[in-house]
Length: 208
Image 1 (tube, rainbow, N blue to C red):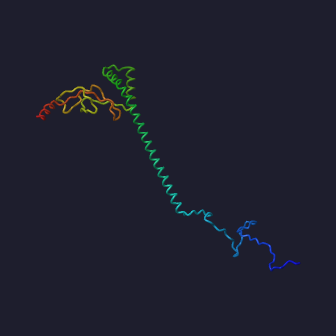
Image 2 (image 1 turned 90 degrees about the vertical axis):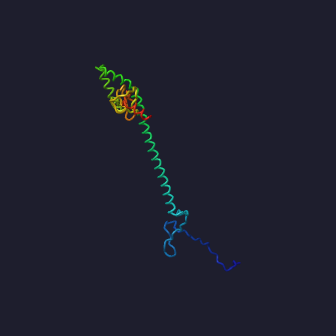
């Protein structure tokens, strides 16, 4: 018996290829309008995350400003540290030199007494001159002269008298030279001080 014809013809399944790129040629396929079809972009393809380029630029600028401020602060701190270390180094050096020079002052006193008595001769005189030259290079300088006004910041009065030859307290004798290194007084000059003779009477009148 022939098969029953129910009005439907037997047909093969239809497979449609919707790919935009031809897998064999690698070229874009033409659409119905004759133009190459373009794949549809998604937010993931473009890298969009909801924040626009303007937002990214603002964040980068803020980070750059913060890093720049940090570097400037570190540079300022390092500069201050270097200055402080240099200043401390100078102070320590001055203190060390001043201590060494102070220990040598009695030696200079002996040299001065020998010179005053005419005993500084021969090789000893040359050694003494060399020593004095070295100490001068290190900044040591003597002070204290007969006839200069008495200054309690640099003079030490060991003797006191009155004299009609002075109009103010004056160092009339230098008993021991003073020495300074730069502006630092290592030892005051020890002197005999004379005041005007009318000083006591003037003080008595003021009291009355």
